[in-house]
Image (tube, rainbow, N blue to C red; front, top):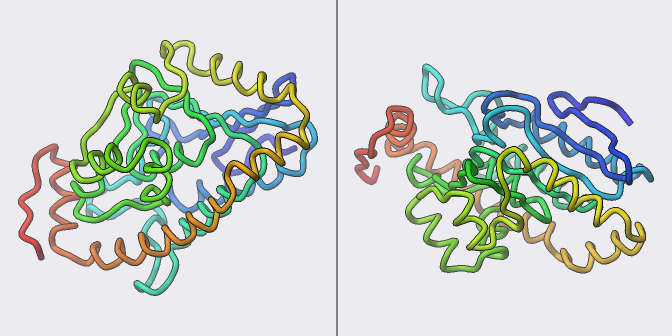
Length: 266
């Protein structure tokens, strides 16, 4: 097992638990390279008999603050919206689809912000451990476009249609306590406990029969990868269309300036 896959740092723990740490502090912004490295890592862990459960965590203030739009030209840093047409599948979402096809249970330790695509990464996991400083938001409409990373499927699947619609339509932010109450988070703990609690859950899972775990997970997530593929096909097409609008450029600027956008519907 390699110790790193790009900015994913890998640590073997006793009891068949592997920790995968996103190492782009402090914000852990995501792009195509990061999601591809994560997918490569998970692919290899699928074939590793010393891994029965994965803890996904981050080094820094935030779990994953989504894409970095706070650049001088207000364009996403790195390959994020990399499709060249509305008909081309976004490469980052193809890597996301790979992640949803992996075999081993994943527990996400979500400290700080999980924003946009960062929330999508958290929702890829089987379970999420949250704390008092957790902040989750699907703020795409504030940026003048629509959700991605399969969130239009995974979030309603976890917390129901109405609560998902509230988050999508408003772009509001929820804290760790609300995330736990709504079912986005599965365990609520102190910020200094979040990794330990995640490792405890992973260890409890990993002590069980590995073939049974893989079989059960395949049954419980039956059709999920195909559903995410279908969702990201639509999401990517709509994102490409909407990123060409004036409202999208205004949304990025407004969010970076921490103000309400002056949208014109064009």
